[in-house]
Amino acid sequence: MLILTTTAVGKVQDFMSEHGASTEAGLRVAVLPGGCSGFQYGLNIEDRPETDDEILEQGGVKIFVDPFSAQYLDGVEIDYVTSMMGSGFSFRNPNSSGGCGCGSSFTV
Image 1 (cartoon, rainbow, N blue to C red):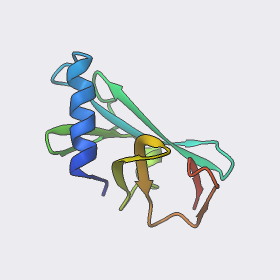
Image 2: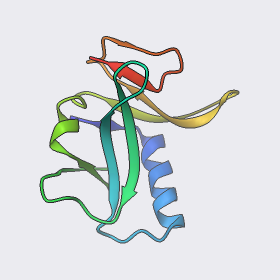
Image 3: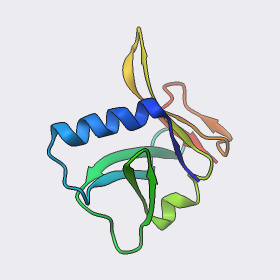
Image 4: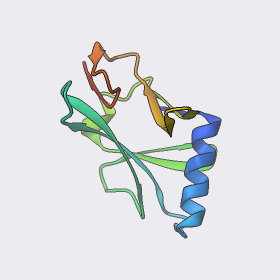
C-alpha cells in the first residue's frame, strides 16, 4: 500500500528517538482536504493508533493510516530528500492527476 524509502525510515526513527517516543508510537500519514489543488499530505508522530486505523510496519517504523486517507495512499512512496532548496519528506503518488507548483498539494 504505502512505501517508506530507507532514507525516510531512518529520518523517522531518528526523530522518534530524539523525542523519546514510546514503543507504541508511530508515524501518522494522512491526506487532508486543503492546499491549492484540493488535498495535502500530513505527517505526525503519534503515541498510539486510533481504533479504526490501518497499521503498517516498514523497517521497524509503525505507520498509522485512517480509513479516509487510505483510499488516496495506495502505491504512494514517501522519501526524505536533501537538495540546495532544503530538505524534507517528498511524496510520489501514482494516483495523483495533478498538483500545485510548490508540490505540497495534489488532486485525484
